[in-house]
Length: 286
Image (tube, rainbow, N blue to C red; front, side):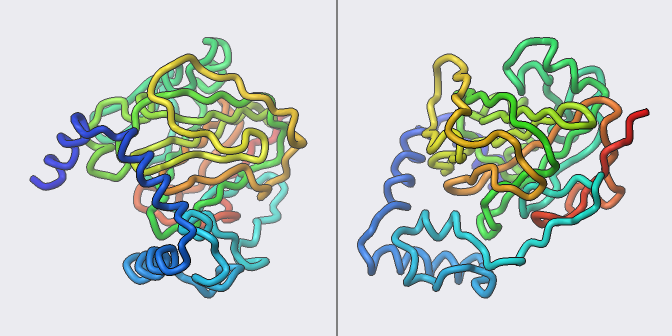
């Protein structure tokens, strides 16, 4: 009952306004205030501060700086298998599997189309038909930086404005087409084994999405799709390289083109993953 009420409220709440307010609160620099926010968050969500690179809370200028924290060296070793695909984030697998007839499963009884998710030309979307997808949810306590799951070349990035529904389990199970309705940043990669895409999905309370190429992208409910300038940073990426970060938590979706990869059997709903762990392997091409 409470979950259903929370979802219903999201249809009427001014989600963009509330998210903008949280964006400002997360950037308060008053020392006592930001320290209070950080310490309360650490206690509430049992954040492991032993792996954080800086001293908590003293070395962080704002709560948001803590939220997008760096970890100590080697806290997330990157699997060295040459054909292995690694998890781009710390999180929990919502669902993973095959893309059937251009549709991706969101939850039991709900799916959505590749064309709607990618908001791009049909030929590019068709490259993923019969491919693989994995949806990974980042809880508030998770490390919120996103890393490259494989070697490749970043060939395009598009920001797609949209709504800001929560991406928690209750909302995903009840809002039809949530991931194609919410704002998102789509990164397209060319690899030796085919094409791949990584989608940052915006959500309620996610004040912005940042990458080395784009800087900070603030939520926008309406407007045209923005083709982003990639000239500010090298576009060749190695497995484990930093791709960006969520300023507050959300979800990523990883897509691989047809016959390019297989997921490991352990990549199933409810499984926890960490950056750098092998979650699948690229298929060799004859």
